[in-house]
Length: 368
Image 1 (cartoon, one colour):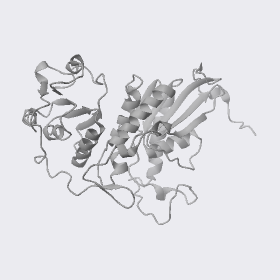
Image 2 (cartoon, rainbow, N blue to C red):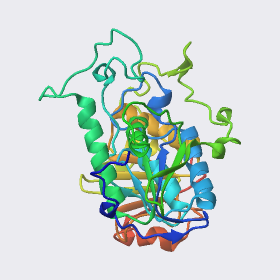
Image 3 (cartoon, rainbow, N blue to C red):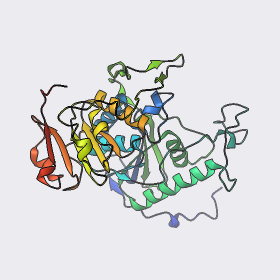
Image 4 (cartoon, one colour):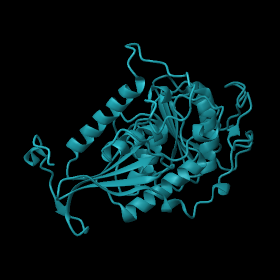
C-alpha cells in the first residue's frame, strides 16, 4: 500500500536535462574509491595520512582518463586525506577541473565490527574485542556514519542537478553506497578506483547505473610497478618493510647542488620541486620548510619518496603527480627548484614564484 504520509510534492525540485539516457535526469553521483595506498600494500607501515603507491597513481590516472571519456562531471569532491585527494587530482585534471575538499568524507579510524548486531551480514566472526567506544559511550560506527551522511546531504543539496564525482575511502564508500541503495544492513566492497554511478531521473527516485566498475584497469599490469626494494613479501601477499627504512634525517643524502637549501629555508617558506633529481633530496632539504611540494611524473620516484615521508610522518611535505598547468595560485611559493633543462614552460613555474631570486636551478649532469 502507498505510504499515506508520503507527499511527492515534498521531493526536491532538481533541474532536469536530457543527457542522452532516453529520459531526463537531474543529479548524477559518481562514487570513486582512491587508488592503492601505502597502507593497502605495506602491512607494517604506520602512517597518519599515507599517499598512493606507484600502482595507485597509475590506477588514478587510468580512472581519470576513463571518466573524462565515459563519465564527464561538473565537480570533483574529495576527502582531504592524501590518497583520496591525489586520486581526485587525477580525475579532476583530466576534465580541466580542480578538486574540492570536503570534511566529513575521511576514512574511519578504528575497527567497528563488534558494534554490528549479531545478524549483520558484515560481522566477520565471533570474539572480536577491539571496539573502543567514544567518550560518550556511543557506538563509534554510528558517529562515523552520521558524519558521512551529513557530507552526502551537503553534496546533494549544494550540487543539485549537476554531475558530481566524490572520491573517498573503502569504509566511507560503503556508507555512501548503502545510503544510495536505501539500506544500512549490508556493506559494499570497492576495488581501488572502482567507480559507482547513481542518477536522479525524471520519476524522482534514485537509480543505480553500475557499482564498482573497473574496466579502466584491464590493461594495467601491477608487475610493472615493483614494490620498494627494501620490502619483502609475507605469506599473505602483503609487503613488509624493515625496521629502519631511514636511520635519521642527517643520514639521508642530498644532491650536491641543492644541499645548501636545508640551511637557507625558514619555517615560513614554501618550496616547490619540479622533477627532483632523486626522491630523497626534497625530504632532506625541506625539514625546516613550512610546506614542500614535490611534483614528478615518474611513479616509482613518487612511491620511493612518499614511503620515506610516511615513515618520517613529515606531514608538511607532499609528493604529487606533475599536472600541468601547475595547480597553484600565483606567487604561492618562496622557492621553485628546477633542472637546467626543464621542459615545463618557464612562465608557468615563474607564475607561482613570489620573487625571481627564489628560482633555484640544478644541473642534470652534476656528480652525485
